Image (cartoon, rainbow, N blue to C red):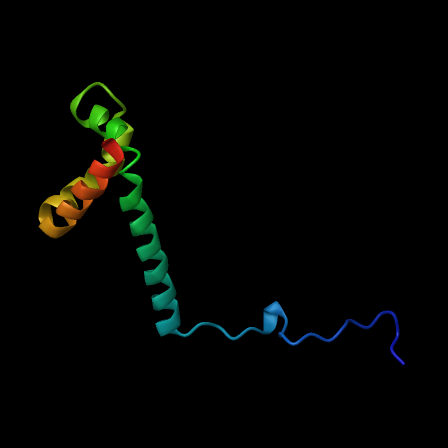
Length: 94
């Protein structure tokens, strides 16, 4: 017979008993998060192209222009990435 104060048994260990990540798993998880962030960052230029353009070349937000400046520089350094970004932006602005 079980008392009312006993906790039900679960298959997973409690949070405090979880095994810590190894260095390899930690690095892999950080690189995966960084990759996901980078993909979201690159894809965000599509809908933000005109605000970026206004900030870079006209009197628009300098903050938006500064946010996308690393992407602008990277697209210049890696021509295939630049061509891919131009193709993607054309989808949004047409």
